[in-house]
Length: 307
Ligand SMILES: Nc1nc2c(c(=O)[nH]1)N[C@H]1C(S)=C(S)[C@@H](COP(=O)(O)O)O[C@H]1N2
Ligand SMILES: [Mo]
Image 1 (cartoon, rainbow, N blue to C red):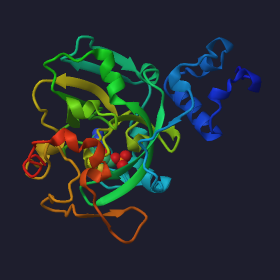
Image 2 (cartoon, rainbow, N blue to C red):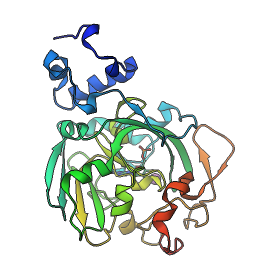
Image 3 (cartoon, rainbow, N blue to C red):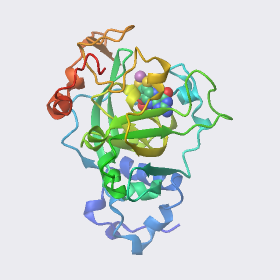
């Protein structure tokens, strides 16, 4: 195995060693590019291999423990208890992986994970996340804006919504419970919003399977369920998609699913939340604290009806 001498590495590439190791591990998992990155000819490494950019869009709040973030999950394909996804992680193989981007676009195509990582520099984005069930976390995601991917496929004028299809394999995953494959959706302007992330990692490391490896959606002003995991297809469509949770409970789960302390879920108050690791409840903030950036997307929309 070829190893670069320290003086082969431009200062711009020197990252936190943990981050660097994680990236190497990712590339190995993602299809054996590790060797290519070690070759001197590849010194001008693709942007996606550069150090993580710290994002001004990150919250300054302390991150939830890695243990909770990777051990307390909703990923029903891998079981319905919070501990199940971590335990059943071995059932999903995150490599090799491709994501089809199709529908109302001028340049439909499939992207391998390696290709996706080259689309934009990877950023660390520390986001508040809130589940409709009433718990919240602060998660240091690693990813790139979904907008960077959408630009590549050139959406047509008739495209108004984006549908996200998760991986499903009935031989190895939960049967029944929900309608599979798991589907999520966003309006095109929400999908293009700079806060909307495709995550490929957390805590500077490759995304664990239970968190949606190798690539998942993260939309911090919406309830956690909007963040489809282990995405295999992204479809640009004209009509508002019917998502998995809308099918499961149309009176409980709307298309928008914006965090809104003023509109309760029939079974859970949305006024307060329990931050995992804390004992006193917090007041839930409008749009999960991202109102300044996203409220303008919903001018004229009755958020009580469009929940
Ligand atoms: N494919 C898929 N994606 C999913 C889910 C799921 O069951 N399957 N659960 C959602 C819900 S309800 C939540 S709260 C978040 C949890 O993400 P996390 O486990 O990374 O915190 O994932 C969302 N994405
Ligand atoms: Mo959730």
